[in-house]
Image 1: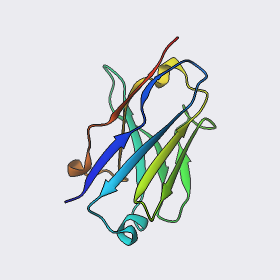
Image 2: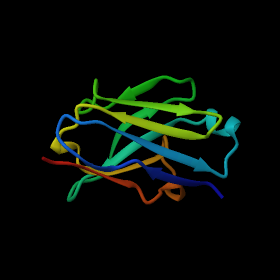
Image 3: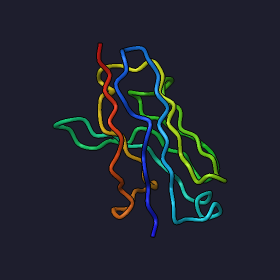
Image 4: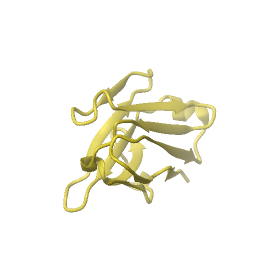
Amino acid sequence: QVQLVESGGGLVQPGGSLRLSCVVSGISPIIFSINAWGWYRQAPGKQRELVAVLTSGGTTQSGDSVKGRFTISRDIAKTTVYLQMNSLKPEDTAVYYCNRNPERDDYWGQGTQVTVSS
């Protein structure tokens, strides 16, 4: 059974940085590498949105609101997806999730809370 566990969130001041991790268990590195993965976030009262995508070929795409500030990456051997977040803003406050892209309903984890506040 595939499970995704996010970590690395916390409280940070505006302008600060965080690095989120998402360990994907129950999957081989080969299968991990041929899938595209994404980071998503959901702020209170808002719909979940796609933040960044990493394709199977290693190409990355970011949403307009985070472009130039957030970077998605992966470690195939560790079947782990990362999200480096720099220059954080209060509007980045949300619960962050990872999932395959396109997402699978049975892959959603608990997420990790990111709060940007002074």
